[in-house]
Picture 1: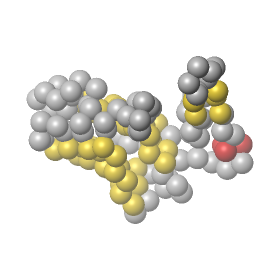
Picture 2 (picture 1 turned 180 degrees about the horizontal axis):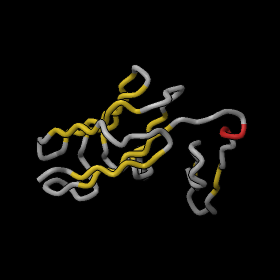
Picture 3 (picture 1 turned 30 degrees about the vertical axis):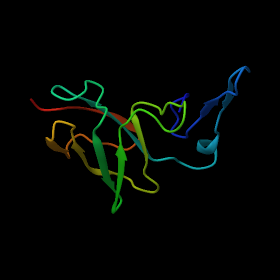
Picture 4 (picture 1 turned 90 degrees about the vertical axis):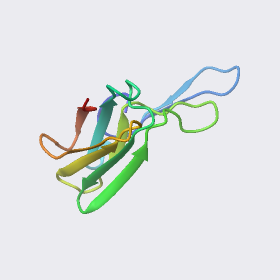
Length: 121
């Protein structure tokens, strides 16, 4: 999402070669609904690493574990990205923090937005 239009772009490179940027133009064909979640730990890791995030929207619950990686020698994008399909609104975001605390946010959530959630002390 390098151009912040909602579709995911990819940066990749092979050993000893220049990076390649693959830019998606999906949003030119149809609307994209998404939510980015940026956890901020106070007791847990400050970047939210180790948190489990659940987003409920359009009758579905999507879950991601924030481990900061996606595979061998790779890095996932931060914040966490959730594709919402046809959902027109986000019902709630639930976070289970590494500290064991659980938090639910249901106010101020909009599709195609970034939500920052700070762990309660």
